[in-house]
Length: 246
Image (cartoon, rainbow, N blue to C red; front, top):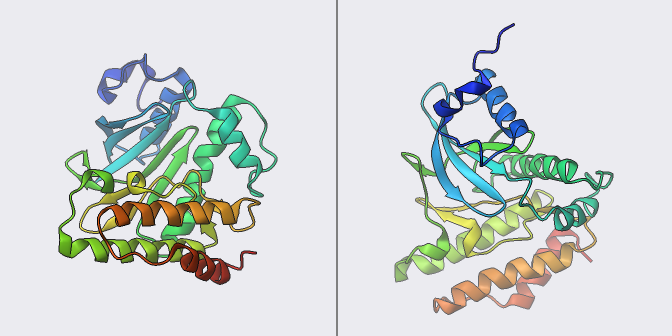
């Protein structure tokens, strides 16, 4: 059967070939042909290791496509995270295998967190090195990160408490975010936790270390905003006991 969309139709996606290899382009076309996305509108955010595109589904709802750039990813560091995760401990140490499993892992982590009621983007699908998630923002423009938002004094304490509550929800889901900071939280009516690619299960050998780091990052940020923060050690002990960490 002839594909609905040809690889030659790159211009329709507004993507330059120099950005992605052919396998990534094929993955995008598969998402199009499956009806998961209808169109790719443009770049919403560009980083060294990934690019986030704004896209639309068949009902013109906005979606976000997070595309991992295999040639720029630190796959050795990613591999270390993966092999420490019992769910991915057997992944091969090859760039392609690591990138594909990294994307799959973020989808799984987001699914777990979202189903547990965590304020995070809803995961939609993944294919190869492309993750499709709910778009947080409007008209193709991503919501600002917490680090880029000037919170009103009356809102600071509430946002801090909200984020700590989300940390607890993530723990109750069986995960630790492991990379939580003001850079990985979007503000759009409320805080949304993003970037779950480094999230690890509670059985991870470095689980306690990652939890302590997440707490420290959150506390340090809000302390600089003159927010009345909770004692870091007490938070760590409470969360650790709740999660059954040693």
